[in-house]
Image 1 (tube, rainbow, N blue to C red):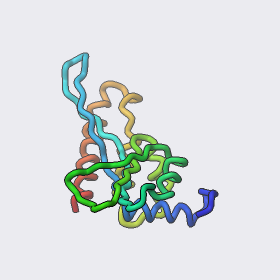
Image 2: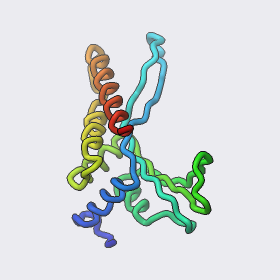
Image 3: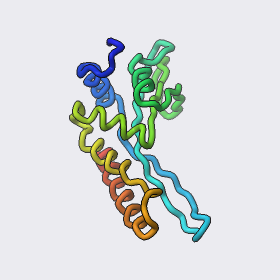
Amino acid sequence: MTSKFSKRDNLCRLAGFLEGEGCISVYTVRFKSKVNKMTYYHYGPRVTVYQAYRKGRYHKYFDIFVKYFGGSIRKGSNKKRTYGKKIVYHYSVRSQKAVKLLKTLLPFLEEKKDRAVLVIRLGKINLSKLENNKKDSARIEKRKLAEEIKRLNHI
């Protein structure tokens, strides 16, 4: 793989890696308002790629994901699954960085394109820039989008 990321074939490779080993989903944060003591939920976009390796180093595509889209790589230890002597690595990116990644790779996605479109829509809803009377309807829209994304992930 060449160092020039803007080439179409490199974007296709990253999209293929995301399609095969990745998960386009929503993260949820629960918080209580200090003003009215109500409990609210924040839904945000998340992209995760998992990979198990026998060798001690993760795949070079993880470095390219981090270089151009941000996020982090961590070594996982999932005790529920047994991978033998393989080590599991996770690349994860959230919020607007996940939206940027999905917008860039959207033309190259096939199987997960519908999820990517929904997650991009979810990421565009910014509650902090809305007036108070419009925040409730935006929260409802975010919740509906999050439920639809979860439904697609369980098909």
